[in-house]
Image (cartoon, rainbow, N blue to C red):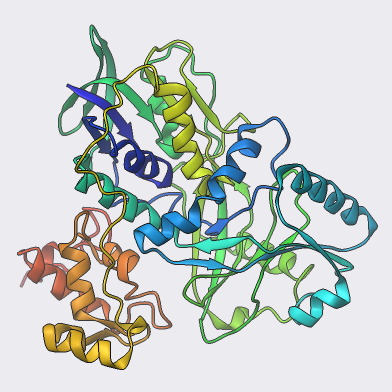
Length: 475
């Protein structure tokens, strides 16, 4: 009998699993994907919003501020990238400046630092800001992370502390039992006291397995992006337009590792598996970015990608015990600012929804941090020499664009929650993230995976179990 089954291994589910693993609880984290953080957590703007945007009286407004303030310490504990960039909300004219005034008022109430700059003052710091920008509202405490890196690290901590992880398992049914619930997957069954539904775009389907009339439906919105080569220095700050009812708009976002993201659009989709980029979507990004930025370096694009926001029929986060299903907790509709809010979402679930349902004995063996991975590019020359002397694989470069060694790739496969696919390696240590997008290193990564997983190269996958890269030639 489990205390908890958590469905969904994105940033919400993994952050919750990590915090729960500090206690003597039997928990399992289940996801239908082949890796942690393969859905919305993998494809978003990666921004730790400070919390000025959500409306008063909402869970978004409450949890965004609390969550954002935890991120720097969490990333320090987990040895994840965290970059304090600051953000500019750019207004073009008096009408948009009125919206800025409302945002500044919310920031004031929530204790969020902000500054005012004229358009000309802002352009001295950001020369690519459009000449049409008349005023900037600056939020210097805004940061960026790699969301999947944080989620993988959270899962690693949770598993090291005793949480079970089940990937490639699809939940098929959830039945009421005398002692709680039985979660049935295509691979097994899990008797549990409590179910946490953190299934992202599939949250309504999971809820529909226990409730006759689910109180919300998921209405995913697709966002499409350009990834700009990291040899282009386009902006130091995150640059937003003034937000509208549709969202935060098309942005320019500097990333932890030096690339720039340009996007996204926001298009409602019917198919929850629709993740392809479109000419129309990318044209929308192009046309709208130039309202606040000039000289967009689209000619330096190295990749396009799209992701789905787990939006729902509710405009706020849905974090509640299902009214028609005791001990079934919905943690749904965690769209923007869901990444920034994730640590506080976990706190809220534990403190407000679970505190009277479980016994909260501390796990004396729990560690909430993790061992730092070796990152050769960050080491001094002396440190590099020492590492190579210790293990010559650290001296063999596999990814030329990002300067990733074979030793780092092997490490990420062998770690707890290690990579089991080419994309899994890419997410953890970045081979394939550079200018050639794996053109040089992918065959080498494939061979390393085959060796480390003790399988044939024919069995190595790009991402899902069905995405084999090589096929045997039949003669």
